[in-house]
Image (cartoon, rainbow, N blue to C red; front, side):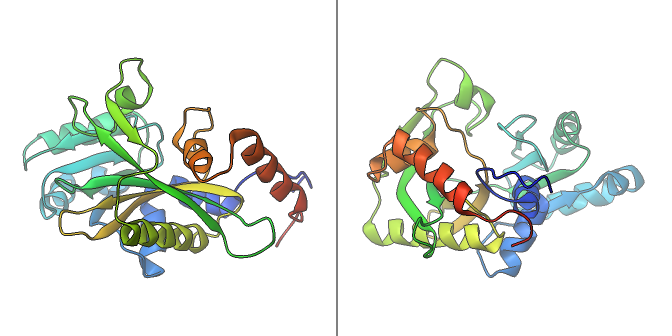
Length: 246
């Protein structure tokens, strides 16, 4: 609206990418693989908690209870069985967002990531090498402590040790995810690879972490695009993009 050029996704793609509920709806409608989930909006929770908990119980455990529009893994709880733990986890998540999403977990799955960026020459978006996060934290998932506290609780493999066919599948799904929400500039797409080899999209992050140690720049560095060149490319893409509706 201000006619100012900027790096990254527009309003709609940013909002869809932030709201895990609508993100999954858009991806599923685009024919992309997402895991089972249950959204819980505030009015539903206030009106009929029992029905909400019954819907959660229909998922296979463990489940992950999350703020629908949160970040940095804040307010997320793992629930391993159909108990009052689900209700308690929802209350924890409510401290960060009145809307909740409960996602079915994938036991024994690998967690892979892939960076996506628009092409400087105007072609299809391009994907980085695939990386893997291997969690060693007590929580058993990539929570806030594992991401940010000094004690290393994860192993980050860049690139991931995966078969070329699997890497190619993850890269193609990452590009399709990027395009499905109308993303621009850059994004990081996170997926699970189940024990039987299925790739399921976890989420897209339309403005991923950008310290030199963050996964997005590390994946591109391993793809032959060092940090200074990556920043330059993203600024160039932003300057070339027209302002206003497009």
